[in-house]
Length: 173
Image 1 (cartoon, rainbow, N blue to C red):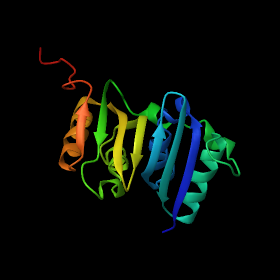
Image 2 (cartoon, rainbow, N blue to C red):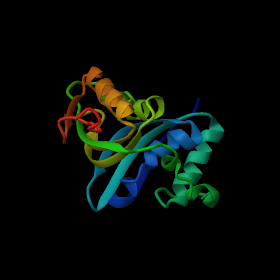
Image 3 (cartoon, rainbow, N blue to C red):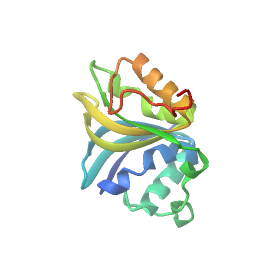
């Protein structure tokens, strides 16, 4: 399968939409963040994309339509937002910090977004796969899926620092 590194450059608000998460849903590609610097105003992400040739080409056309990379744009895909099909009554904001070498090479955000049915939004980042760093994300979805995502992240060895102490729907009160 082809593996392609794409440099995403955009305003911070554009990258804080679940653009990277959408790539997995729309085009069935595996995404892994190799380097990221995302602030309130601006975002840069070096993204590794793996999939079939057609899937990778569709991914590039979609990102070009959003104005995140240069290239041939596919405007028919630009308006698609698959996150609207997933209920998102609960959300948690977490900071993920690498603590060991090699943690940057594992697509954990892709895995929780694809396998656990949550929406992952990149909020801020100072990360390099070789040096480590941190990524702040919002994980949204049904309570059970959000809690499973946090539990999975704890098993990866990545330091997980949530803004809130727990996620609940208060149904047991």
